[in-house]
Amino acid sequence: DAGVTQSPTHLIKTRGQHVTLRCSPISGHKSVSWYQQVLGQGPQFIFQYYEKEERGRGNFPDRFSARQFPNYSSELNVNALLLGDSALYLCASSSLTGGGFYGYTFGSGTRLTVV
Amino acid sequence: GDSVTQMEGPVTLSEEAFLTINCTYTATGYPSLFWYVQYPGEGLQLLLKATKADDKGSNKGFEATYRKETTSFHLEKGSVQVSDSAVYFCALSGSSNTGKLIFGQGTTLQVKP
Image 1 (cartoon, rainbow over the protein chains, first blue to last red):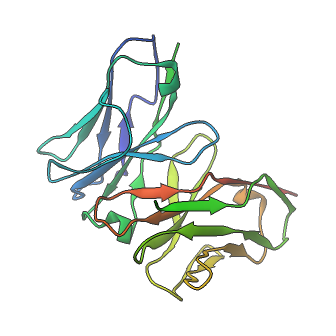
Image 2 (image 1 turned 90 degrees about the vertical axis):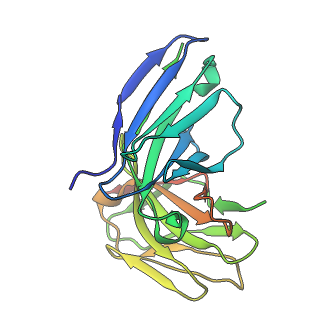
């Protein structure tokens, strides 16, 4: 079975630009969460979606948005990129909203560099 | 708010040494607790979990016990291998069902042959 897949793996953008990151969950998983991991720190929660509805949002500015599609894949969008948005963006999937109870499966991430 | 604190690294051990990585947490309610491992250039892998007090999670020789009285979830392994070299993250899930995991800052483990 394929795990959680994210694309692209690496990305370089210029300040002020917009970026879209993509995630495909494990087959059958309906919950997708997004995390930002700055170098040397633990991941920080950005969003969770379940059955195409937002179920949780972390402390990130409105420049960050996301959505989930009918096939449960998801996109994370970041507008007006700042240097501080440079990070590894991780997607995680779970079969239930209670992924915090059962555990999430993470993808390998998208490394975003803003210059 | 909820938080997780891990011992600072890096932790450097010789092969076959005993490992302990300390993790303490602050949370309302009854969170689930997790250890994740991150190998260089990769995402996070769930190592073990515990969902209630006194539960012991275990996997691949690693163990951690959910201690509510000390709000701790320390990771232990009796004999580490070079292949265990990685960054280890302690995490908790909040009592609200938002899918949010709260991570510690991570502890780098380096095992030397």
